Each structure stands twice: as C-alpha cells, then as structure tokens.
Length: 193
Image (cartoon, rainbow, N blue to C red; front, side, top):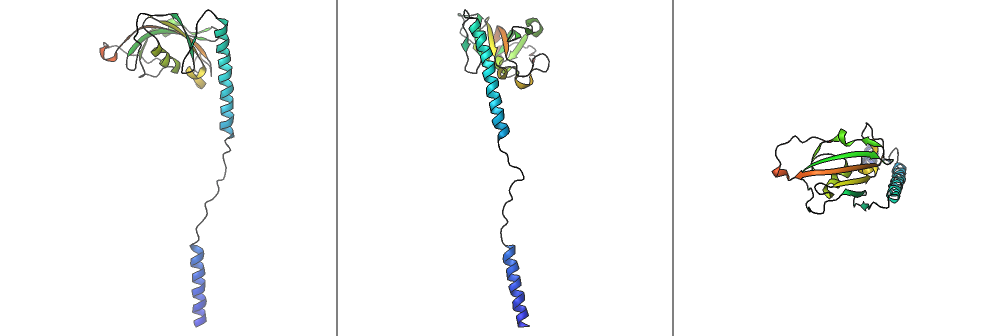
C-alpha cells in the first residue's frame, strides 16, 4: 500500500511539472514579405518620374516663360503679377478666385466659366492640394498658371467625372480678392469639390 501511494505521488508530481511548462508562441500562419509595398514604391517612383518628365518638357518648350519650382513639388508661372501688394492669403482668410483646369496637352477639362465663382476659406475647406498651397503664394489680382503632378491634383482617384486616374494638370488661377476671416461680411461659402 505504501508503494502504491509513493507511485501515485510520483505520477502527480510528474503531471504537475509537465502542466507548468510554458507554451511557446505559435508562428504566424502567413508571413508578409513586404513585396507589395516594395512594388508600390517602385511603381510610384516611375509614375512621378514620368509626370515630372512631361512637365519638364512643357517648361522647356516655353523658354520665354519663367517657371518657379515650389517646395511642395509643383511648378508655377505668373501670367499677371502684382508687385504693389505684399499681402497674401493666410489661414482663415476668405479667397475669391476663378480658375480653369487643363490636361498637359492643353485640352480644357473644366473651363473658368464652369467653375466660377470660387469662394474658399483658406486651409479650412477641402480643395485640390495644389490649389490649397498655390493660393497662399498669390497676391490680389494675380493670375498664375500652375503645373501640378497628379499627387497635387486629384491623385489616384481623379475627380470621378472628367479627370482621370493619376492625371497631371495645368490650372490657371486668378485671385480676384481675399478678406481676413474676421472682417468678412456674411457670405455663403461654397464647397469647391
């Protein structure tokens, strides 16, 4: 009987020790190799290089026009420049402007008449990224032509109407006026997109 209790104690001890063993973490069923991201980066670099080459050819084909490179990755030239005023729209100002959108071949996508008038609360409304930045470079009564790569325009989705996927654009913008937010008389601010 004593042997039976010793054997039972030993079995219980072995079972207890075996159950205390920590389980090891399982390996994931599938592992991400990062291939998709690497391919996406390569694809986007090719797209940017292609668009920049097209824009560069436009700039080189018009040597009489002085284009400026922005810090945001687009180019612009002044059709009408205002050297007298120093003020530019800033966040919260209400900008009144007209603009026209063309593709890089010069075909009108949206005419100025179709898009006018535009009233925009600077940095407080959702508009095309390039315009959002470009308007803040302008002075009252200036007319500027912007060359936007697709990422500064409507990007991958286009506008789901006339502007296609990854389409670089030429936008000619006339800043008619802008007013500080707190001095603005009540006006219906329209959403531009």
